[in-house]
Image (cartoon, rainbow, N blue to C red; front, side, top):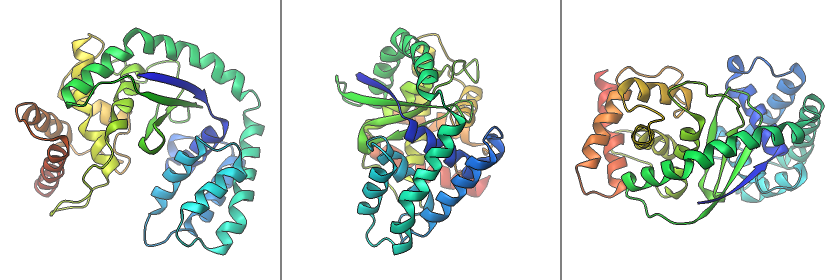
Length: 300
């Protein structure tokens, strides 16, 4: 896989804002000014909600578009064009709200580009040592076609001490540029391989007869066992229930779960063992996982 490494000030700004709104307790270092600007943006996005998408989807959409936008005005225009019928107040206020947020972010991070440049080198070195091997192992176990496709890695300021997100629409991932592993058994290179492996997974099942599950949530959880197995094969991680539970928490694979159910790590590994012994399409296997999680939730 050919990677394009980039540091995005606009995307980093939005990531900080999202953390301040969604995970305020985990981001105590954010300034009061940035928190206020973040909540102003959250209020603005709330006004643009139709029946779908949800406010969380709107944040994610804004992040995905930021990777390809040159400034807040361009980002606002791209975002509003994708909404079916945005409210006038949103169209009027979004560009200025985004601009204000960026200015506050720049005040607090005047050396952003220099700092990101220093952080990029070590991350690239780690990836070059193990990354492609991990990714190929994950793809083989997921039965995904291998290829020399390209993707973008957008590095952002660490706010949560290690976090990543996948944007299949733009063939890119967001990755907090941390310099150390948050958990010794989960190297950041493995997190990155886990994220990149998800870029091919568009068109995942959204619904089951028993529950409705977000496709991104299923995708992120379902690929964890494959990533841990690849890490174990290369001797940089372990494949175990404990490692699975740690990865769900540390990688924040399911942002809906502020508390991880005790049954989930074992459930994922049991499902993965079953998938490897069956010749079924990935989408069907993920649908099985949706049903299995729903049944475990009722029992547990």
